[in-house]
Length: 107
Image (cartoon, rainbow, N blue to C red; front, side, top):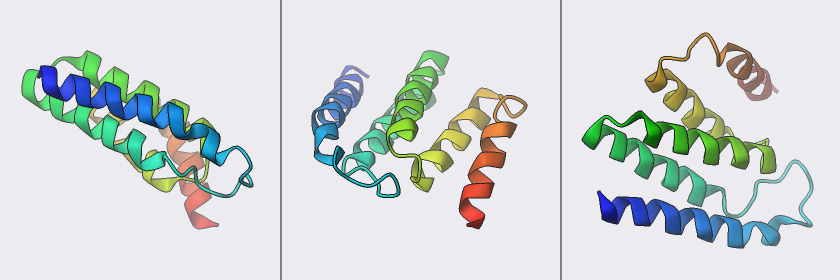
C-alpha cells in the first residue's frame, strides 16, 4: 500500500510540474500531462480495491476534478470521474456532470 500511495503522489507531482507545458495551448487542446492524472486516479482506485477505504476514491475525484478544469475536453478524465462517482454510489450527484459529458461527446 505504501508503494502505491507514493506512486500516486509522485504522479500528481509530475502532473503539477508538467502543467506549465500546456499554458500556451488553445482551450480545445488537451494538456500534455492528462495521462498522469488518469494513472494517479487508477492507482487510488486500486488502493480502494485493496482496503475499501473510501478516502482513496475521494483523492481520485479531487485530482480528476482539478484536471478536468485544466483540460475540459478530455473525455478520458470525464469517463474516469463517472467510474469513480459510480463506485462512490453518487449517481444522483453526478447526473449534471454526466449530462455535460454526453453533450460534449455528441459534438
